[in-house]
Amino acid sequence: MIDDLDGCLQKAIPQLMEQLPSERDTPETLRAKGGAVDVPVPTLNSKFGKKQVDSANPFGFSQEDEDNYWALQDSSERLLDSFEALGPQGGFLSTQTARDVLVKTGLTKDQLRQIWNLSDIDKDGYFDHHEYVVAMFLCDAVIQKGRPIPSELPISVIPPSKRALLNRQF
Image (cartoon, rainbow, N blue to C red):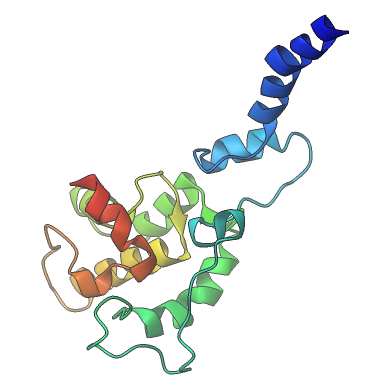
């Protein structure tokens, strides 16, 4: 009986634990763990029950609140329908879908590479809604306003939920 318990603790439970979702999982591994069932993959903001803290003010944060202000908040709300129309899986656009959207802008491959590197803030190869908004903002800045692509994103353009990721990359 002790041997059975030891076997369970040493083999069966670790195998079972490996099948459970983990914060280290990428969207692809989460989908693989879901098996044949179409399991929605959570976005990073709400992964494992962690909720993004929103302002009680329906007009958002002011520029003086540097920790929470996002210059693209209005764009985010405006672009939500177009993001959803692209069919994100678990809150993420696939690499191919995001690529196709960017190619349609008519920008050069080098410009799109720079925009991707700036927009894919968590460097997972997928665009969540906020990263999509940043990419569309950068494309618009180049196409409509003739601005150069910045070497790094201004802090006000980085979604507040992603700022800690950038701090860890340096």
